[in-house]
Image (cartoon, rainbow, N blue to C red; front, top):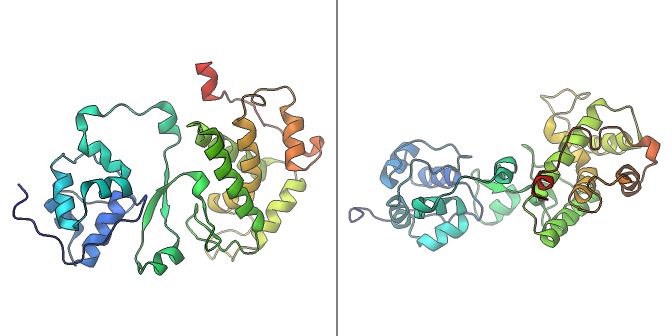
Length: 282
């Protein structure tokens, strides 16, 4: 029954791609409610972390209740938070595909400057894919815990544009898997390979970032490594996404050429121990 429900005094709109937990916590904060109480009004009756995007405890009745409390239509809520679609038609849920499990979108804070421009000053967590790692309006890195200014690193924003074009052009669900594999390789090169021209680039990029007050300057964390190696990771992603170059005997030479280094400077391990998921579908 929803007849006793009323729209909340402050019915904030969701941000596109926002996680369910982020939106509910913002609603609760704005209306001075405990998140557990707001959840009880909707139906799941459990606390939600801000990065929570699960709907396992929701029933179809929860969507109309959320719509009433927020003053938003159900289609508008589904458009902003696609994870809610699993609540609307529970009988049609299917097990996630293997690629979906491997490439689950990451949950990261939205660009703080974009949110401030919209009058939102609290934490907003969005579910984003790797190719959405840069806010081009404000030149800010979004994939890590810290939103670093990229003004001095134009190659990062350029790499993100290439990454977005690759995703649009190929329309391949395995693109994210290709990126994750490429990221694993460049991170391994960063940590384990002998010093090379690649390390000179990466160290220069790291040198433009503010000091990490809690980190070891000689051992940057995963987030900083991902940022520093992102252009090279994107280059490898495009190679792995190519049916022509994937498994090609000339892959190392092509990778070196695209990375603008000599073949002998390319660290080992480009294809070792990995089989592309699409190979099983061939």
